[in-house]
Image 1 (cartoon, one colour):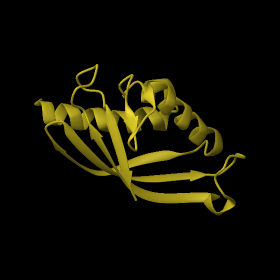
Image 2 (cartoon, one colour):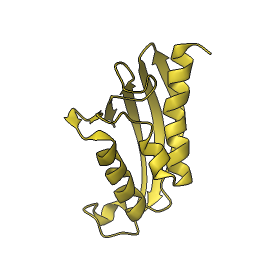
Image 3 (cartoon, one colour):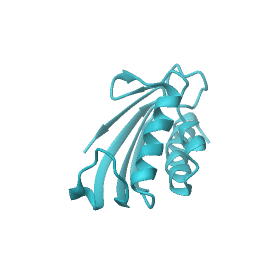
Image 4 (tube, helix red, strand yellow):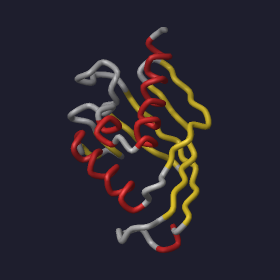
Length: 123
């Protein structure tokens, strides 16, 4: 498997870990010093956000619809679904959420050679 396919598989494994509810494993797919939406949040920050999502949407799932990878970049277009059961800042209009988003990851310069250092999302 070449580096591009390895990077694509890592992005997909994040979704798989999230869907299993293994948030430590999901956060482990991010570099210790990673950025999210241009802000340095680190792995601990990613884990905190994932925990909030699963607390408020316990049945949350990410479905990989398709992906594109080239070298250090991977973009995964995915579907998100979940039922709001919490009391977070998410409004009631998200009671039964279904969204599509594209998540981009840059795997260059990571502490682990295949762990995203930067991530962005577009809806």
